[in-house]
Amino acid sequence: MKRMLAAVAAAFLAVGVASAAEPPKGKVTIAQKDAAAAKKGPVTFDHASATHKAQKCETCHGKAEGGKMELDMKSGHATCQKCHNETAKADAAKKAIASCDNCHAKK
Image 1 (cartoon, one colour):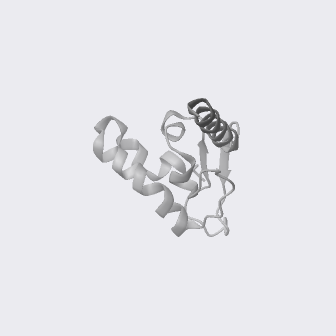
Image 2 (cartoon, helix red, strand yellow):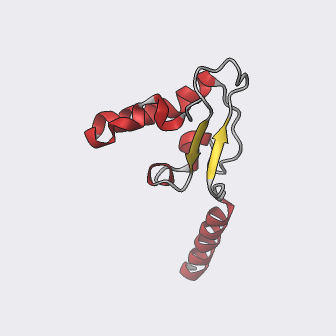
Image 3 (cartoon, helix red, strand yellow):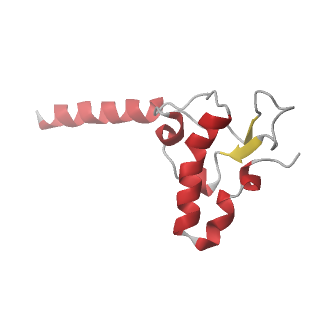
C-alpha cells in the first residue's frame, strides 16, 4: 500500500513539474497600446534575470502556467510596481529598480 501511494504521489509530482511553463528565452518587450502617446518607451525585461527568475509564474501572471499577458499602463504598473517598490525599499543597493528607466527604454 505504501509503495502504491508513493507511486501515485510521484506521478502527480511529475505531472506538476511537466506542466509548468518555460519562460521565453531572452528579453521580452511590452509596447504600450498607444505608443505614440506614451511618455516612456516600451518595457523590456528578461525572465532569466535573478529578480524575475526567483518569482513563481503566478506572482505576475496570476496562474502557474504563465502565458501571454495583456497589459495597459494601469494594469502593468499594478502588476510590476508593487514588487519593484518593495524590493527598493528593503534593499538600498537596489534602489534603481523602482525608477521608471529601469524597465522603460528611453525614447
